[in-house]
Length: 489
Image 1 (cartoon, one colour):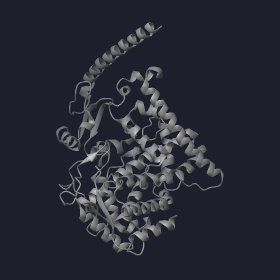
Image 2 (spheres, rainbow, N blue to C red):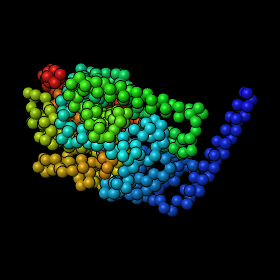
Image 3 (cartoon, rainbow, N blue to C red):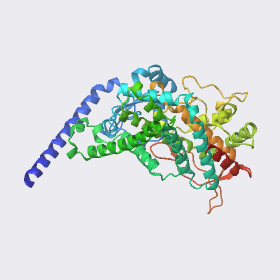
Image 4 (cartoon, rainbow, N blue to C red):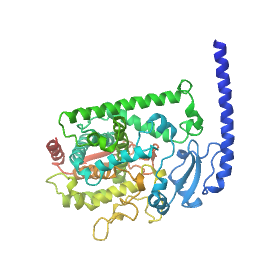
């Protein structure tokens, strides 16, 4: 019996090798036939193509100069990728003709196994995408986000209080505060006070799983699609993907049922999940489908956190911007109270700071055009580029919705962008009202430690952690922050 099993395994290995060779030859022949229909672009290694994350921002900029505003490259695991290197090209294809280009790539590992088509960000099921998107719009549109103001203001106060007490863990605290606020908005739960909280840890792991699966070459099935039909018994990656789906489905359903129980007990539960439960019949969503909607928004919360990390190097590398923020906060808010989201319209420089932060360091630069056509200072952090001669916030640049391109285009425009903007505004405004961010001192040299804004880590673009000093701007600041937090509960 053992001898027979070994023979079967050997036959399977030979068959697999044969199919791999045939698939590779077929791919090369297909590529040669279709090559004339594709835009120009850099050539990669045969069979492998371009390894995207071996290349930085400068490579993409140079490719854009050489090949033009629309170019093509082959990335292992994703086949052909078209890159848009200008605002005009992106708007034309993704906004004006967004109905033609709104569909996601197949992403077999993510869609068919890790999430089974239930993850809003990557689903290819158009009808389900519309239903889920409708929930997001109804709960996160420009008017609806007002219901989350207290949540966002409370988290900003907790965040500032924690950093005034101890700034050594500012990197983790940015993530904790942001995802804690998102969870409160989704599930109507109290603030999550520790980055090591099991729920935050679990959602952070989900973000990493999805990010890894979307990286070209992570799963061979994206390249050899016939592998999706392999029995799970001989496909360890498929067994693991099934385990992950079942694990996270159980988590999302548990959180969903908790909200449902509270609703039945008479609690208001105004968050996104409470809304989806009340409206599920109208929306035509099953409980499992509805329970997965928050996954996209918690995933987006982690993206917002990574954007907010950049305020720290920005304030240290461009201290004039910090000074202007604080001058505006003193003039409008004063020092007798803490800032709130109702101050937003009267704080144009603070709003410009959020815009500039999202322009300056888009966390997913591969998906965001970055063209040096707006002046030589494109790499400087300068909120004044969004301020007119009268000190007012400039209208959004044509075809950008928010004055930058970070949130995407057309039907795939980020549904949580208004919530994200408000979170970034109040978090940064609260911190800079109460505190000043200063460089730490190098113990060996005695010189200030100024981070390099081009020194990034991760698949998403985030700054490398560095030490900094966060001190109160005036004696009463810390006490006022704590008192304001207690008022909000």
